[in-house]
Length: 508
Image (tube, rainbow, N blue to C red; front, top):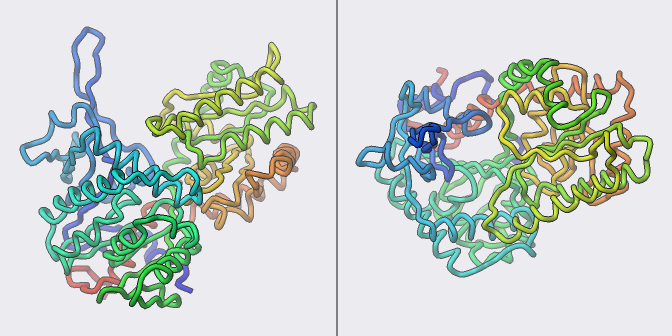
């Protein structure tokens, strides 16, 4: 088995040391800095900048600030075109420029067919084992190819054979092979942030061969967990001729090139989350309770996610209904806070989901609510990181119960924020995070409504000693390897795997 790759020997080794003097290009659909117009209240507009505040984007931004280089991404801010130079570039961060952000302009039709189309109506449902939600409209694939070519043209224009190019996620599956044709000696790596499906699922995709060949243009292809690696190798063996798969080494030899396939379980910036969660003191928490009508003596369960059909929100609400129905003694004693943000509402499936979630919440509040207690509080306003992590810190339970998820960093964020009284993490066995956290979280099967409700009861009645013991071990797990160590592990693997290691610094 190829196994899960561990961080470099020096776990805090910065990625810039591993890159050495080589040029770094990061290529993603999402940009790290977005320029927008904001009305100042006097009828005038000024330009403001949305900066990365957490997660992978913030982590990569910190690496890029040390290494320099170029980040290539779609410019979706309404003021983005007005701040770039003639090459469509802007230096970032705005207050102290350290690297170049190269913006790609995509029109409405391109976004409809490439992003909302093939990326999120073909690859997204397939990779989450939801074949019935896939829409194989022909124009989607044509546009996906064209946009990948657009990104590739920019990569090949700014890179040479001494460049490290890091592609992000499922939006750019074809670009590595396209770029390889122009830059045969450059180093390409890609991280696939969502699950990889079983061969029986992936084989329904008409473009399966082209997608696999595109990804095999990389020197290194990373997934969150080992199971996704093995399923990718299954697909390669099932689809491609004249391919040699070495499962022990985790390599694929195809078209005279070798690609390493390995697992890199992504983590969070635990120290930062812990620090920010501590800024939410008792007064701030009291203000939150008062704002949303949550009584002082009421326990709080939290759920945080995009409104996506993979996150298991309707199934969770069904479990809560069963919980309050079978355990009336908890009515008035537990409030569930659903922090949600709308996503991809241009896609009919997502529009339906929004309606379903709102209907279920209204039903629960009508059925169980009283003048003094609202069972489900829905929060759709933007929360700062301090507010969000403070909400994690003070919540008694976290319900992280997707029906399928590549990793789910919310589970790890909740754990990192638990600096006060120990809460309980309820975690779906279908999330990638279950592999590392499942032993000390309470395992949930999202579709088993009755068992799910029983786990909520178990969490609420868990003895203090057990709660503390479980959360202590979870915090040790999450704190062992932070986000920067994850990035360092990827680059260490690139250095070891790259066909040409010239230009990488070594420890010798």
